[in-house]
Length: 62
Image 1 (tube, rainbow, N blue to C red):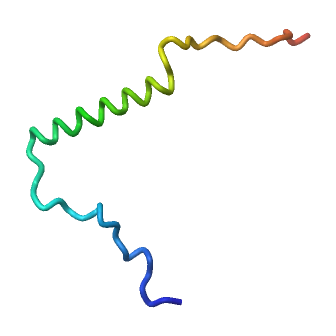
Image 2 (cartoon, rainbow, N blue to C red):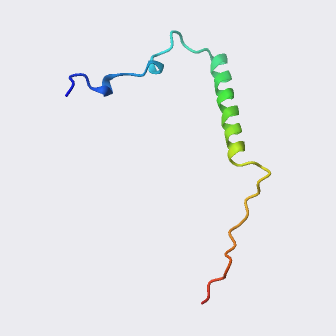
């Protein structure tokens, strides 16, 4: 077994940014993330696709 555990290796994207994010940059990033989420939800659940209730083909007999 290796003496270097894989859990110790950190992905390069996990490094701290070289400077603190400004409030304007943060708001822009959050707005962009929100737009992407809205777009993904719209692609998943288009408004033109109504959800129809489940209607069984046969009613259960008592």
